[in-house]
Length: 270
Image 1: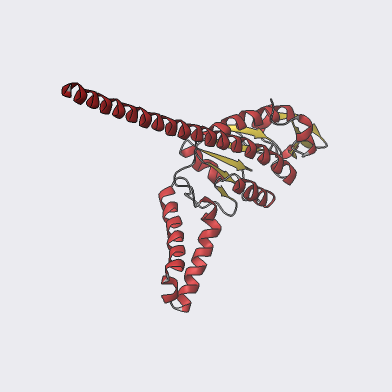
Image 2 (image 1 turned 90 degrees about the vertical axis):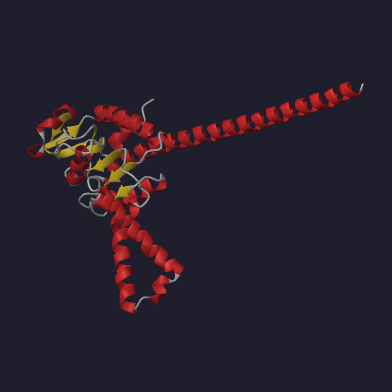
């Protein structure tokens, strides 16, 4: 069953592309027509591409791996931060720090630094600093939180990257391509879809369009995470049951052995 339909995409304005003079010819397969100088995206193809992307993203979430969302444009940042935070995935909505993927060990060091500052405030070290030093540390913590706070739990490179507006987030796409990390993206008619592994042709400027597609993606990822959680609970229950069974078997063997000893003693007395 499809996760969306033509009418839902139409109501959200996902079909509006860019001006004809700004188009990228490589997006031609996803363009339905031109109207008043604006390209109209084929929403039937958009629905198919959404289903393809959600199927793969669900499997990634089910495996327990992370998907990094990147959306720093004004229309998308609040939508992404709110919806992605709810499903426990990392996201970047402020600024893409160069080397966030290709120089990940350095990024991890910066996150550790942020954790060290947090520890200072709880163990009393913060109180021993001068007023000026405390101010400097506080500002440093705020800056780190703004740029890296949303990826603080990302202990290793993500299994995939989801991008809103591949032109604005070109550095993120390049870094993911360089590391062979699959890229999922909303791609408008003015963009080159070549570097994207899973293209979702759609309007990446309208908040309603972005919100609808991100919402569909989040539901798929959440389903994968819930299935993983359910499978782990079943495995743990099975392991506990097996352990209890082994314990009962061991107790039974011990009782049999004790019974044999008693019978042997009785026979010896007789």
